[in-house]
Length: 163
Image (cartoon, rainbow, N blue to C red; front, side, top):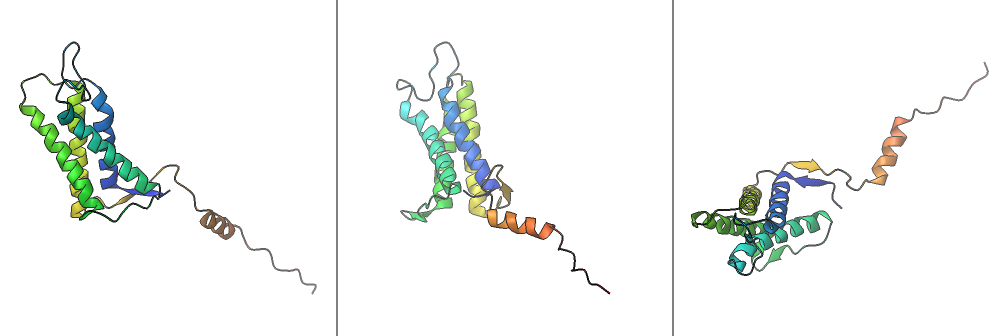
């Protein structure tokens, strides 16, 4: 498992997780209001951003876990693929603003998550947010740990001479 993650990947990972997890809350307000997975409430148009968020989060986690992901999918590299997912999810969620029903907390949190996905993906495409952050509890390199311990111990004293 990698010990570092870029800022852009953190933004995309958190955004994707938020878009997916909060899709189970009420998409519209009111008593008995549906969530994004309700089949009677424009099911595909509301679940697609959640599925794109799940795909983005899984893609990033697999990359952090060291799984060999393909360098290209069709003609898209990894950053372009994540950008299509993030921008599509944000566009779909933004299109719901013009509807005439009262939005629930699930909608607003999915909108924020999908916007974060798009922002993180565009940052990665532009080469911004490439600073890395240490992951707490990441795998430790035992070779570097033993070499640092060896360098911190003082050398043995010189042999005593009888003079």
